[in-house]
Length: 218
Ligand code: AP5
Ligand code: MG
Ligand code: ZN
Image (cartoon, rainbow, N blue to C red):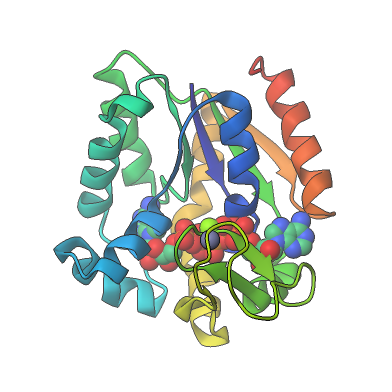
């Protein structure tokens, strides 16, 4: 089963991903997390992505598409994957269709997490993340431990560089310009399901469960 998590920066894609991935028994594949891991390890891929990420721009399609094709070819993704932050352009969506068609598969559902712009800035400016395992907190809504040590893995809890206000504004503009057209694209294919991403993370999780069950997923 291939599930896409679509939504603006700060919509809660990462927050909801673990539960969905557990429920459906498919791996969580976040292109942003993969780029950040490569960045911290200083790999050529990380170095190539660095400038784009720092500016809040998208990494070029060909680079992202190669990365995802490679990730989907691993054994743990044989039964599908939960794609978080990919595709982000119509070009990426078309490339994904080709990759999936070559293995006799397709996108089953594209879940759009819909959150008003006003909430996004507050969510992103307060976000804190574990550098090692990617777990997330929020300075006001779900504060991390005071020693900034991740209770799950012991990693350091930090603020992402691209969560500074200036970069957030550019990421939101990039989303509107390049990624939002995908809602029409998947809508036209009949695979779009909209879930309101406001309310508590637990409320949103329940709404996603309902939407997935209604769509025939477990
Ligand atoms: P990426 O890491 O994918 O960032 P993003 O799409 O901007 O999304 P975020 O991770 O910022 O938001 P999220 O929806 O996961 O929110 P979260 O759950 O953390 O991409 C980063 C960069 O990599 C891009 O800018 C680009 O350069 C590059 N890149 C990645 N993929 C690419 C691609 N396909 N093509 C090209 N370039 C690509 O939640 C946010 C905060 O809100 C947290 O603090 C959380 O605790 C809080 N929160 C969550 N839910 C709730 C709730 N219900 N109520 C209150 N607070 C909540
Ligand atoms: Mg995320
Ligand atoms: Zn951790």
